[in-house]
Length: 356
Image (cartoon, rainbow, N blue to C red):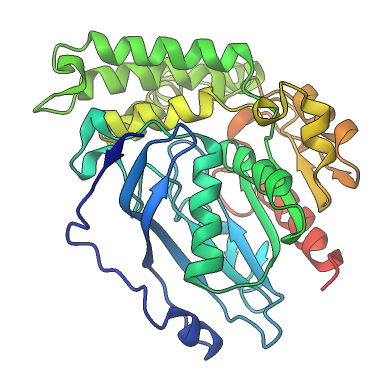
């Protein structure tokens, strides 16, 4: 078994009386849970695994109102902030909301902390394992009301439901899929190859972040994130260039190794792998009530993937988002947009209907 170690750098760590503070009604905005020794799915180990997170609201006396929010491949614990707050989808007047950084970014352990390409390759199930340790050993919760998130976040949500079926009452899967489809794998492969063509890449042991390669990779990704109808609706070259380059800027802000490991984790997503390739067996293990929300125009993870989940999970509520925004339907231009209103309504009603 390979063993690796990682320093805590200068990140503030709060492993001590965190649970006591939560029960007292404190609102800790940002914190880091540390796992002394973390074992990855591939057998590698990491000392002092960091799990970054933010919290809103108060845990009730019974400890039954906690909701965990995950995020997509290039996201962090802050990505879904616009849906978290008083009278929003994740109503902080009602719920204790925990937004978590997946392994590989934010305040969580990542290759850029010092190990670079020697950082263990991680999976979606590794992300969930780290989150479960945060929730149980860090926050000392006995269960969650719900777990929810979009895209890669929904991959994590499914693994929560499969491997911890009695730990939560509800699952909120936005743009989900039981596995990464081949078109997504092809996109990831093309993006990684593009970054590796940047002379700055240097086999991943670079001194200067290969920003040019990352920007080009973002241009490859952009057409898959929006629908044909969306691109046809653009009225000017300026609008087209903005749509083409939006993820160029997002990718360029990432350390290339962190970015690559994240997308490789998403590329390898398949809930059936621990079950001999039997997807039906994996999905039947989910006992939580599940809200499934694809985007009607998603070309990256199309609605048929959500319908497979609807058929395979026992207790589902299916709500297709009417939008031309494709895979980015949960991130419309403003909070008055119909997509935002639709998501807020569906999530709010779903959470209210869950048994306490």
